[in-house]
Length: 497
Image (cartoon, rainbow, N blue to C red):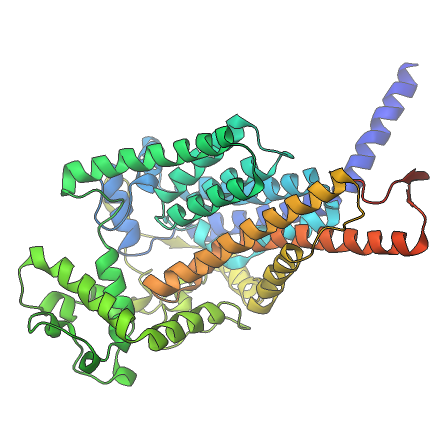
């Protein structure tokens, strides 16, 4: 009896291993890439400016006018170790968990393990994702909170009250890491309303979403005198529109006209020059600091109002750029070399070659092991998700949204297909928002594309499931016979989830 039980247990284990063998292989490969990064570049990567600011904010824990305090709080917690390498180590672990969370969600939803593993592969194996995890930067934490919120919402057939509260809290914290998370919170609330999950669930989500944001806004007000999550919107938007501004078409005051560039649009630099360079009109304008923010805001809004075609063309061009083949940048885009595994030396304008800052503000030299670094650089030449592939994934999700549930399908299957439509709409819309908002307010930077690796692939997997089920249902109706699966007849449209 004991031998039979042991044999049965071994057979079950082998069956599970066979069923999940692809995700196991992907996790092993993804782990190897991240170990190589830890060995090749010690103790971490830092982006001069952002990383220094995050580490400084972690010491003082005060709301910043440019960057919200969510990521500095986590850095403060990690600083108890006194070791900077802990930051990329934790973020690499989060990167692996992102892939596992997506795989668990999709298999829970009835997606075939092979398809679910392929949907998890982009975040696990994309070299630019591995690279950003090695930076003292907020992107990995933002992705983790985003996925936590989405998994809570999409896991069950109808999210329970506690899951809605958890999702709202996770997306609120994501917004305190990157303020674009506010947009995602609004989209998730619209998703719950559209699904008609009940007012109590929607209120629970909205409450846990709003409470941390309101609390932070009051904290920000106590320091800076205004209710906001950050105070840099005027600077960013000015930098975004300054390269295309035609001041002859704007109704500007003499003081605000100082923000105009003396150069024709073709000769102007990119947005980051106008935000950060001390020769920018933002710094040379001769008006009191108290009036400067209002002047920048007025200038930016006038450009958008009086040059809507130019502004729309610029934003649409940057969004389309993310779906283009290869990795290339234009004159006004942020250099893609910043997000590639470096060989020394690198150009100073990439902002990654300055001495590293530690938790206590001291400087420490970086150390590079040439062989693993060369392996990573070679892998990164081709080891990323091409833009057209990302676009195809988004298109699959969109196709599922517009694929109407079969009228003759069973009630359970009809509801499941409607649910998949709503899920795909949320995932694709959220991913699109994460591309449109930076393109409209900041600049083109491949860094802003990386969160779509946890949104478009699961949308594609659910979309594929929707399409294949619809085809199977049509074949069954045409044949007039119920489907057979595993030797057991099933009524057309029975849900797999």
